[in-house]
Amino acid sequence: MKISHLFIILFLFVNHVSSYGYVGHEITASIAQRFLTPKTRENLRELLPKEANGNLVLFTSRMHYASSPHDNPPDHCFITYTPAKVDLLKAIHNYTNRLDPKNNLDFLFRAEALKFLVHFIGDLHQPLHVSRKLKGGNGARGIFEGHKTSLHYIWDSRLINKHIRELNEYNFTFSGEENLIKNNFYGEPFYEPYVKHILELMKTIWRQEIAEWPVCNEGVEYTFEKETQDILKSNSLLFGNKQTYFGLNSQQEKENYSLKKQPPSASCPEFWAIPINKLNCQVVWKDYKPDTELSEGIYYERIKRTRIVEKLLAIAGIRIAAVLNSLLG
Image (tube, rainbow, N blue to C red; front, side, top):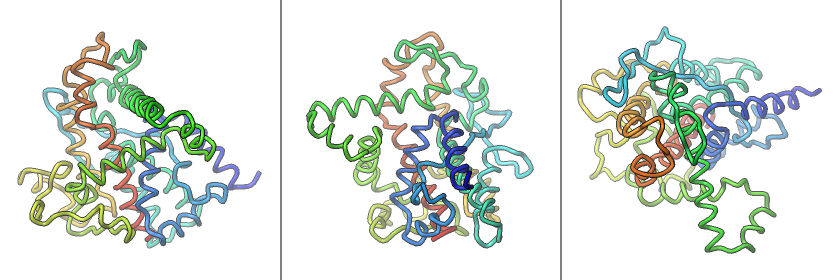
């Protein structure tokens, strides 16, 4: 069996047993793919097997978590980066460095690093991966659309699948069976309309904040392909040097941000994890009741109204592209 065949079989197997549902990982990779520079795409082709044809979507791996003993949502959300600790944050730094051409690792190590890095950055943007309560929600009972499950699995897969299904049903109603058959004929994945919906949100309602998403600190600068730069341009009158939305808001947080020093890698997961961890208090565990249907009512309506699932997928995609462009572009 050729090495490339072995890689694709192994990666596809691991992909389907991963906990942050494989659809979520494929969506973040699909979004990231659209924001890669031509040079990054060219370099990726050398790392991916020929069968992948430069497609990031095929390559994800096992998840990891990051947590703090002081984290207890919804009352208190807290996460810190400990360089000596083996967790999701450290893993992202490690695999970023392994992928970096400057470190002169051989092909197999860098190909493996690409797989893990794309997956781990995706995991970082599922809030329960950065919360310790009840094992990241795996030990929290949940009911979703009549099925008994866990809070973790609801956020990994159930919410995404429900949103995809609802959007596809809407598109079917207004586009008709002919267009649906046409899309299937051209081989688009079933989640492609959802990806396009997220990209449209990025171009419209999130346009004014999107440039802040890949920000790390002054030591890291990310670039994107020229055609997509317009989407990422921030309005200096609105932003200036202030971190907004998914950045660090308070001066205290900025002072505590460890990457003011020389960054450990071209990624900055400890910076990105702080506001994502806070979502556990603001959304994920807020109004959670283990024996209540969570696919409707106040819990679900808040998630749907704020588009938080779509936004996290979009941010993950942008950050994956940013890191890959900085390393390979």
